Amino acid sequence: EAGVGGFFTKTKSEINLFFNLVCDPADVISTVEFNQTGEFLATGDKGGRVVIFQREPQGEYNVYSTFQSHEPEFDYLKSFEIEEKINKIRWLPPHNPAHFLLSTNDKTVKLWKVSEKDKRAEGYNLRDEEGRLKDLSTITTLQVPVLRPMDLLVEASPRRVFANAHAYHINSISVNSDCETYLSADDLRINLWHLNITDRSFNIVDLKPENMEDLSEVITVAEFHPHHCHLLAFSSSTGTTRLCDMRARALCDQHAKLFEEAVDPSRQSFFSEIVSSVSDVKFSHSGRYLLTRDYLTVKVWDLNMENKPMETYQVHDYLRTKLCSLYESDCIFDKFECAWNGTDSVIMTGAYNNYFRMFDRASLRDVTLEASREVCKRRAVLQPRRVCVGKKRKETDVSVDSLDFRKKILHTAWHPKENIIAIAASNNLYIFQDRLTPNGHHNTPEIQSAM
Image (cartoon, rainbow, N blue to C red; front, side):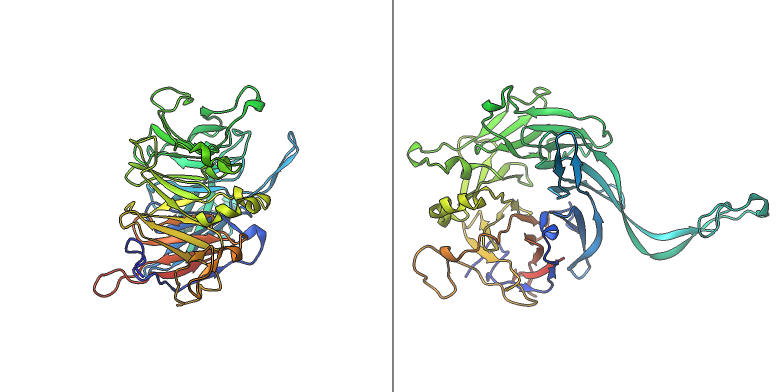
Protein backbone atom coordinates (compact mmCIF):
# COMPACT_ATOMS: atom_id res chain seq x y z
CA GLU A 1 0.00 0.00 0.00
CA ALA A 2 1.14 3.53 -0.69
CA GLY A 3 1.89 5.73 2.26
CA VAL A 4 1.99 9.40 3.09
CA GLY A 5 4.12 12.08 1.47
CA GLY A 6 7.19 9.96 0.88
CA PHE A 7 7.37 9.22 4.57
CA PHE A 8 5.66 5.85 4.26
CA THR A 9 6.05 4.48 0.77
CA LYS A 10 5.32 0.94 1.90
CA THR A 11 3.66 1.76 5.22
CA LYS A 12 6.33 -0.26 6.97
CA SER A 13 8.70 0.79 9.69
CA GLU A 14 11.75 -0.80 11.17
CA ILE A 15 12.75 -0.14 14.75
CA ASN A 16 16.41 0.27 15.53
CA LEU A 17 16.22 1.64 19.05
CA PHE A 18 13.64 1.63 21.83
CA PHE A 19 13.79 3.42 25.17
CA ASN A 20 11.34 2.54 27.90
CA LEU A 21 10.88 4.31 31.19
CA VAL A 22 10.04 2.57 34.43
CA CYS A 23 6.28 2.36 34.70
CA ASP A 24 5.79 5.18 37.17
CA PRO A 25 3.10 7.89 36.86
CA ALA A 26 5.82 10.54 37.33
CA ASP A 27 7.55 9.21 34.20
CA VAL A 28 4.60 9.78 31.87
CA ILE A 29 5.75 12.13 29.11
CA SER A 30 3.77 15.37 29.01
CA THR A 31 5.50 17.30 26.18
CA VAL A 32 7.87 16.68 23.25
CA GLU A 33 9.76 19.33 21.26
CA PHE A 34 12.54 19.40 18.62
CA ASN A 35 14.87 22.39 18.55
CA GLN A 36 15.15 24.60 15.44
CA THR A 37 17.82 22.44 13.78
CA GLY A 38 16.42 19.08 14.84
CA GLU A 39 19.74 18.07 16.40
CA PHE A 40 18.18 18.08 19.86
CA LEU A 41 14.89 16.70 21.14
CA ALA A 42 13.51 17.60 24.57
CA THR A 43 10.84 15.81 26.58
CA GLY A 44 9.17 16.80 29.82
CA ASP A 45 7.30 14.48 32.17
CA LYS A 46 4.84 14.58 35.03
CA GLY A 47 7.68 14.32 37.52
CA GLY A 48 9.03 17.74 36.50
CA ARG A 49 12.07 16.35 34.67
CA VAL A 50 13.43 17.42 31.31
CA VAL A 51 15.35 14.89 29.23
CA ILE A 52 17.30 16.14 26.20
CA PHE A 53 18.37 13.82 23.38
CA GLN A 54 21.08 14.60 20.84
CA ARG A 55 21.28 13.15 17.37
CA GLU A 56 24.48 11.19 16.79
CA PRO A 57 26.37 11.24 13.46
CA GLN A 58 24.89 7.84 12.58
CA GLY A 59 21.40 9.28 12.98
CA GLU A 60 20.28 7.84 16.31
CA TYR A 61 19.14 9.97 19.24
CA ASN A 62 20.79 9.34 22.58
CA VAL A 63 20.39 10.94 26.00
CA TYR A 64 22.36 14.19 26.17
CA SER A 65 21.23 15.70 29.47
CA THR A 66 18.65 15.14 32.21
CA PHE A 67 17.68 17.65 34.87
CA GLN A 68 14.91 18.46 37.31
CA SER A 69 13.11 21.52 35.98
CA HIS A 70 10.26 21.94 38.50
CA GLU A 71 9.49 20.71 41.98
CA PRO A 72 6.06 20.34 43.62
CA GLU A 73 4.98 23.45 45.50
CA PHE A 74 2.11 24.49 47.73
CA ASP A 75 0.17 27.74 47.45
CA TYR A 76 -0.64 28.59 51.06
CA LEU A 77 -2.89 31.52 50.15
CA LYS A 78 -5.18 29.43 47.96
CA SER A 79 -4.51 26.12 49.72
CA PHE A 80 -3.73 23.95 46.73
CA GLU A 81 -0.72 22.03 45.50
CA ILE A 82 1.14 23.10 42.37
CA GLU A 83 2.21 20.04 40.43
CA GLU A 84 5.71 19.68 39.05
CA LYS A 85 4.39 18.36 35.71
CA ILE A 86 6.01 20.00 32.67
CA ASN A 87 3.21 21.36 30.48
CA LYS A 88 5.29 22.77 27.61
CA ILE A 89 8.89 23.10 26.42
CA ARG A 90 10.01 25.62 23.83
CA TRP A 91 13.55 26.03 22.45
CA LEU A 92 15.08 29.44 21.85
CA PRO A 93 16.92 29.94 18.54
CA PRO A 94 20.65 29.20 19.01
CA HIS A 95 23.05 32.16 19.05
CA ASN A 96 26.13 30.59 20.66
CA PRO A 97 27.39 27.10 21.54
CA ALA A 98 25.04 26.92 24.55
CA HIS A 99 21.38 25.95 24.18
CA PHE A 100 18.45 27.71 25.83
CA LEU A 101 14.92 26.45 26.43
CA LEU A 102 11.78 27.49 28.28
CA SER A 103 9.87 25.00 30.42
CA THR A 104 6.68 25.57 32.38
CA ASN A 105 4.43 23.86 34.85
CA ASP A 106 1.02 25.21 35.87
CA LYS A 107 2.34 28.43 37.40
CA THR A 108 6.03 29.10 36.71
CA VAL A 109 8.08 29.44 33.52
CA LYS A 110 11.84 28.85 33.69
CA LEU A 111 14.61 29.68 31.23
CA TRP A 112 17.34 27.03 31.18
CA LYS A 113 20.85 27.15 29.77
CA VAL A 114 22.34 23.84 28.65
CA SER A 115 26.07 24.01 27.94
CA GLU A 116 29.06 21.72 27.52
CA LYS A 117 32.24 21.82 29.56
CA ASP A 118 35.27 19.79 28.44
CA LYS A 119 38.11 21.82 30.01
CA ARG A 120 38.92 22.93 33.54
CA ALA A 121 41.22 25.66 34.79
CA GLU A 122 44.22 24.68 36.89
CA GLY A 123 47.07 26.57 38.50
CA TYR A 124 45.27 29.32 40.40
CA ASN A 125 47.46 31.60 42.48
CA LEU A 126 45.08 32.21 45.39
CA ARG A 127 43.34 28.81 45.60
CA ASP A 128 44.52 25.22 45.86
CA GLU A 129 43.33 22.32 43.70
CA GLU A 130 40.31 21.78 45.96
CA GLY A 131 39.25 25.43 45.66
CA ARG A 132 40.26 26.52 49.16
CA LEU A 133 41.98 29.89 49.69
CA LYS A 134 45.74 29.66 50.22
CA ASP A 135 47.65 31.36 52.99
CA LEU A 136 48.91 34.52 51.28
CA SER A 137 52.19 34.35 53.19
CA THR A 138 53.01 31.06 51.42
CA ILE A 139 52.68 32.52 47.91
CA THR A 140 56.18 33.32 46.63
CA THR A 141 55.65 33.08 42.86
CA LEU A 142 52.88 33.83 40.41
CA GLN A 143 51.76 31.49 37.65
CA VAL A 144 49.38 31.74 34.70
CA PRO A 145 46.37 29.40 35.07
CA VAL A 146 45.99 26.87 32.24
CA LEU A 147 43.06 24.91 30.81
CA ARG A 148 43.30 21.13 31.03
CA PRO A 149 41.11 18.66 29.08
CA MET A 150 38.44 16.82 31.08
CA ASP A 151 35.58 14.42 30.42
CA LEU A 152 32.65 16.12 28.70
CA LEU A 153 30.21 17.52 31.24
CA VAL A 154 26.77 18.81 30.19
CA GLU A 155 25.42 21.37 32.64
CA ALA A 156 21.84 22.65 32.89
CA SER A 157 21.44 25.84 34.89
CA PRO A 158 18.36 28.05 35.44
CA ARG A 159 18.96 31.57 34.11
CA ARG A 160 15.53 33.15 34.66
CA VAL A 161 12.40 32.31 36.67
CA PHE A 162 9.13 33.92 35.52
CA ALA A 163 6.57 33.51 38.30
CA ASN A 164 3.50 35.03 39.96
CA ALA A 165 1.82 36.22 36.76
CA HIS A 166 -0.93 33.61 36.28
CA ALA A 167 -3.98 33.00 38.44
CA TYR A 168 -4.93 29.96 36.37
CA HIS A 169 -3.02 27.01 34.94
CA ILE A 170 -0.56 27.80 32.15
CA ASN A 171 -1.40 25.79 29.03
CA SER A 172 0.92 27.37 26.44
CA ILE A 173 4.21 29.16 25.95
CA SER A 174 5.52 30.41 22.62
CA VAL A 175 8.75 32.18 21.70
CA ASN A 176 8.38 35.21 19.45
CA SER A 177 10.25 35.52 16.16
CA ASP A 178 12.02 38.63 17.51
CA CYS A 179 13.90 36.25 19.87
CA GLU A 180 13.42 38.75 22.70
CA THR A 181 9.90 38.07 23.93
CA TYR A 182 7.59 35.14 24.54
CA LEU A 183 3.99 34.60 25.60
CA SER A 184 2.47 32.48 28.32
CA ALA A 185 -1.24 31.64 28.28
CA ASP A 186 -3.61 30.30 30.91
CA ASP A 187 -7.35 29.65 30.79
CA LEU A 188 -8.34 33.33 30.68
CA ARG A 189 -5.27 35.48 30.01
CA ILE A 190 -2.23 35.72 27.76
CA ASN A 191 0.85 37.56 29.04
CA LEU A 192 3.80 38.93 27.07
CA TRP A 193 7.25 38.63 28.65
CA HIS A 194 10.70 39.91 27.83
CA LEU A 195 13.29 37.17 28.20
CA ASN A 196 15.54 39.41 30.31
CA ILE A 197 12.85 40.75 32.66
CA THR A 198 11.30 38.48 35.27
CA ASP A 199 9.46 40.85 37.60
CA ARG A 200 6.79 42.07 35.20
CA SER A 201 4.82 41.05 32.12
CA PHE A 202 2.18 42.69 29.95
CA ASN A 203 -1.33 41.32 29.69
CA ILE A 204 -2.27 41.25 26.01
CA VAL A 205 -5.43 39.09 26.08
CA ASP A 206 -7.96 38.97 28.92
CA LEU A 207 -11.16 36.94 28.61
CA LYS A 208 -12.14 37.12 32.27
CA PRO A 209 -15.62 38.66 32.65
CA GLU A 210 -16.54 40.91 35.56
CA ASN A 211 -18.94 38.22 36.72
CA MET A 212 -17.51 34.71 36.43
CA GLU A 213 -21.03 33.39 35.94
CA ASP A 214 -20.93 35.05 32.51
CA LEU A 215 -17.87 33.02 31.49
CA SER A 216 -18.59 31.31 28.17
CA GLU A 217 -15.17 30.16 26.95
CA VAL A 218 -11.59 29.59 28.02
CA ILE A 219 -8.28 29.81 26.19
CA THR A 220 -6.94 26.38 25.26
CA VAL A 221 -3.74 27.19 23.35
CA ALA A 222 -1.79 30.20 22.02
CA GLU A 223 1.10 30.57 19.59
CA PHE A 224 3.12 33.32 17.91
CA HIS A 225 3.41 33.59 14.13
CA PRO A 226 6.74 32.12 12.97
CA HIS A 227 7.78 35.21 10.97
CA HIS A 228 5.72 38.25 12.06
CA CYS A 229 6.44 39.23 15.66
CA HIS A 230 3.21 41.23 15.97
CA LEU A 231 0.86 38.35 15.13
CA LEU A 232 -0.37 35.62 17.46
CA ALA A 233 -3.18 33.09 17.38
CA PHE A 234 -5.13 31.60 20.23
CA SER A 235 -7.97 29.10 20.32
CA SER A 236 -10.79 28.56 22.74
CA SER A 237 -13.08 25.90 24.10
CA THR A 238 -15.86 27.04 21.74
CA GLY A 239 -13.93 25.84 18.68
CA THR A 240 -12.87 29.29 17.46
CA THR A 241 -9.36 30.48 16.66
CA ARG A 242 -8.53 34.17 16.80
CA LEU A 243 -5.67 35.94 15.05
CA CYS A 244 -4.53 39.05 16.93
CA ASP A 245 -2.34 41.93 15.75
CA MET A 246 -0.43 43.62 18.56
CA ARG A 247 0.13 46.68 16.37
CA ALA A 248 -3.56 47.55 16.58
CA ARG A 249 -3.71 48.03 20.33
CA ALA A 250 -1.93 47.01 23.53
CA LEU A 251 -4.80 44.81 24.74
CA CYS A 252 -5.80 42.42 21.97
CA ASP A 253 -9.40 42.08 23.12
CA GLN A 254 -10.49 42.76 19.53
CA HIS A 255 -9.22 40.10 17.16
CA ALA A 256 -8.02 40.82 13.64
CA LYS A 257 -9.51 37.60 12.27
CA LEU A 258 -11.81 34.90 13.60
CA PHE A 259 -11.55 31.39 12.20
CA GLU A 260 -14.79 29.54 12.80
CA GLU A 261 -16.72 26.94 10.87
CA ALA A 262 -20.49 27.26 10.75
CA VAL A 263 -22.29 24.32 12.35
CA ASP A 264 -25.53 22.89 11.03
CA PRO A 265 -28.09 23.37 13.86
CA SER A 266 -29.75 20.08 12.92
CA ARG A 267 -26.54 18.23 13.76
CA GLN A 268 -26.06 19.86 17.16
CA SER A 269 -25.95 17.56 20.17
CA PHE A 270 -25.03 17.62 23.83
CA PHE A 271 -21.44 16.81 22.88
CA SER A 272 -21.05 19.27 19.99
CA GLU A 273 -19.38 22.04 21.98
CA ILE A 274 -17.12 19.62 23.84
CA VAL A 275 -15.75 17.90 20.74
CA SER A 276 -15.32 21.24 18.93
CA SER A 277 -12.94 22.59 21.59
CA VAL A 278 -9.55 23.22 19.97
CA SER A 279 -6.75 21.40 21.77
CA ASP A 280 -3.80 22.53 19.62
CA VAL A 281 -2.85 25.20 17.09
CA LYS A 282 0.24 25.22 14.89
CA PHE A 283 1.29 27.78 12.28
CA SER A 284 2.78 26.24 9.17
CA HIS A 285 6.49 26.80 8.62
CA SER A 286 5.61 29.17 5.77
CA GLY A 287 3.30 31.14 8.07
CA ARG A 288 0.47 30.98 5.53
CA TYR A 289 -1.68 28.31 7.20
CA LEU A 290 -3.03 27.34 10.59
CA LEU A 291 -3.40 23.75 11.74
CA THR A 292 -6.01 23.14 14.45
CA ARG A 293 -6.95 19.95 16.26
CA ASP A 294 -10.25 19.30 17.96
CA TYR A 295 -11.44 16.02 19.42
CA LEU A 296 -12.50 14.33 16.18
CA THR A 297 -10.79 16.24 13.37
CA VAL A 298 -7.71 18.15 12.31
CA LYS A 299 -8.23 21.20 10.09
CA VAL A 300 -6.04 23.37 7.86
CA TRP A 301 -7.00 27.06 7.64
CA ASP A 302 -5.77 29.66 5.18
CA LEU A 303 -5.05 32.91 7.01
CA ASN A 304 -6.85 34.72 4.19
CA MET A 305 -10.08 32.71 4.56
CA GLU A 306 -11.87 32.81 7.88
CA ASN A 307 -15.31 31.31 7.21
CA LYS A 308 -14.28 27.69 6.67
CA PRO A 309 -11.18 25.49 6.72
CA MET A 310 -9.38 24.64 3.50
CA GLU A 311 -9.08 21.00 4.52
CA THR A 312 -10.71 18.82 7.15
CA TYR A 313 -9.38 15.38 8.05
CA GLN A 314 -11.30 12.89 10.16
CA VAL A 315 -8.97 11.47 12.80
CA HIS A 316 -11.28 8.91 14.40
CA ASP A 317 -14.79 9.51 13.11
CA TYR A 318 -15.73 6.01 14.27
CA LEU A 319 -15.89 7.39 17.83
CA ARG A 320 -19.03 9.42 17.18
CA THR A 321 -21.15 6.52 18.40
CA LYS A 322 -19.00 6.25 21.54
CA LEU A 323 -19.23 9.85 22.76
CA CYS A 324 -21.51 9.02 25.68
CA SER A 325 -19.14 6.44 27.18
CA LEU A 326 -16.15 8.68 26.40
CA TYR A 327 -17.86 11.48 28.30
CA GLU A 328 -18.49 9.27 31.31
CA SER A 329 -14.83 8.21 31.39
CA ASP A 330 -13.62 11.82 30.82
CA CYS A 331 -11.71 10.69 27.70
CA ILE A 332 -13.71 13.20 25.68
CA PHE A 333 -11.66 15.95 27.37
CA ASP A 334 -8.29 14.56 26.19
CA LYS A 335 -6.16 17.17 24.44
CA PHE A 336 -4.40 15.85 21.33
CA GLU A 337 -1.58 17.76 19.67
CA CYS A 338 -0.81 18.04 15.96
CA ALA A 339 2.29 18.71 13.87
CA TRP A 340 3.42 19.75 10.37
CA ASN A 341 6.27 18.14 8.49
CA GLY A 342 9.13 20.38 7.36
CA THR A 343 7.53 21.22 4.00
CA ASP A 344 3.96 21.67 5.31
CA SER A 345 2.81 18.86 2.99
CA VAL A 346 1.98 16.23 5.62
CA ILE A 347 0.28 16.59 9.00
CA MET A 348 0.31 14.25 11.96
CA THR A 349 -1.75 13.79 15.10
CA GLY A 350 -2.43 11.17 17.74
CA ALA A 351 -5.36 8.92 18.56
CA TYR A 352 -6.35 6.11 20.93
CA ASN A 353 -5.00 2.58 21.23
CA ASN A 354 -1.51 4.09 20.78
CA TYR A 355 -2.38 4.89 17.16
CA PHE A 356 -1.24 7.99 15.33
CA ARG A 357 -2.51 9.34 12.04
CA MET A 358 -0.70 10.97 9.10
CA PHE A 359 -2.39 12.83 6.23
CA ASP A 360 -0.80 13.77 2.90
CA ARG A 361 -2.33 17.07 1.79
CA ALA A 362 -1.51 16.61 -1.91
CA SER A 363 -2.55 13.00 -2.51
CA LEU A 364 -5.19 12.96 0.25
CA ARG A 365 -3.80 9.63 1.40
CA ASP A 366 -3.68 8.78 5.05
CA VAL A 367 -2.19 6.06 7.20
CA THR A 368 -2.77 4.81 10.74
CA LEU A 369 0.23 3.40 12.58
CA GLU A 370 0.72 2.04 16.07
CA ALA A 371 3.44 2.96 18.53
CA SER A 372 3.48 0.37 21.28
CA ARG A 373 5.95 -1.94 22.96
CA GLU A 374 4.18 -4.99 21.55
CA VAL A 375 4.90 -4.07 17.92
CA CYS A 376 7.90 -1.78 18.29
CA LYS A 377 10.71 -4.25 18.75
CA ARG A 378 14.14 -3.75 17.29
CA ARG A 379 14.06 -4.15 13.49
CA ALA A 380 10.41 -5.16 13.62
CA VAL A 381 8.11 -4.17 10.75
CA LEU A 382 5.45 -1.65 11.64
CA GLN A 383 2.24 -2.43 9.78
CA PRO A 384 -0.59 0.02 9.04
CA ARG A 385 -3.71 -0.36 11.16
CA ARG A 386 -7.38 -0.11 10.32
CA VAL A 387 -10.26 0.40 12.72
CA CYS A 388 -13.61 -1.01 11.62
CA VAL A 389 -17.04 -0.24 13.01
CA GLY A 390 -18.83 -3.33 11.77
CA LYS A 391 -17.58 -6.75 10.79
CA LYS A 392 -13.85 -7.18 10.24
CA ARG A 393 -12.76 -7.33 6.61
CA LYS A 394 -9.23 -8.48 7.37
CA GLU A 395 -7.65 -10.45 10.16
CA THR A 396 -5.51 -7.44 11.05
CA ASP A 397 -8.51 -5.08 11.38
CA VAL A 398 -9.26 -3.74 14.86
CA SER A 399 -12.83 -3.37 16.06
CA VAL A 400 -13.78 -0.02 17.53
CA ASP A 401 -15.18 -1.90 20.54
CA SER A 402 -11.74 -3.35 21.33
CA LEU A 403 -9.86 -0.04 21.38
CA ASP A 404 -8.01 0.69 24.61
CA PHE A 405 -8.80 4.29 25.54
CA ARG A 406 -6.22 4.24 28.31
CA LYS A 407 -3.54 4.04 25.63
CA LYS A 408 -3.42 7.37 23.84
CA ILE A 409 -0.90 9.44 21.90
CA LEU A 410 -1.40 13.05 22.97
CA HIS A 411 2.06 14.49 22.26
CA THR A 412 3.85 14.43 18.90
CA ALA A 413 6.64 16.40 17.22
CA TRP A 414 8.12 16.49 13.71
CA HIS A 415 11.75 17.25 12.87
CA PRO A 416 11.86 20.73 11.26
CA LYS A 417 13.85 19.59 8.21
CA GLU A 418 13.80 15.82 7.89
CA ASN A 419 11.29 12.99 8.01
CA ILE A 420 11.85 12.18 11.66
CA ILE A 421 8.96 12.14 14.11
CA ALA A 422 8.77 11.75 17.88
CA ILE A 423 5.76 10.04 19.43
CA ALA A 424 5.07 10.02 23.16
CA ALA A 425 2.92 7.15 24.39
CA SER A 426 2.55 7.15 28.17
CA ASN A 427 6.09 6.70 29.53
CA ASN A 428 7.62 5.65 26.20
CA LEU A 429 9.11 7.82 23.47
CA TYR A 430 9.24 6.44 19.93
CA ILE A 431 11.37 8.05 17.24
CA PHE A 432 10.56 7.13 13.65
CA GLN A 433 13.18 7.92 11.03
CA ASP A 434 12.77 7.72 7.27
CA ARG A 435 15.50 5.87 5.40
CA LEU A 436 16.64 6.34 1.80
CA THR A 437 17.42 3.44 -0.52
CA PRO A 438 20.69 3.44 -2.50
CA ASN A 439 18.87 4.94 -5.51
CA GLY A 440 17.79 7.90 -3.40
CA HIS A 441 14.11 6.99 -3.05
CA HIS A 442 12.26 7.01 0.25
CA ASN A 443 11.95 3.57 1.74
CA THR A 444 10.55 2.17 4.94
CA PRO A 445 11.00 4.54 7.87
CA GLU A 446 13.14 3.06 10.56
CA ILE A 447 12.09 3.48 14.11
CA GLN A 448 14.26 4.54 16.93
CA SER A 449 12.84 4.58 20.33
CA ALA A 450 14.13 6.80 22.97
CA MET A 451 14.14 7.06 26.71
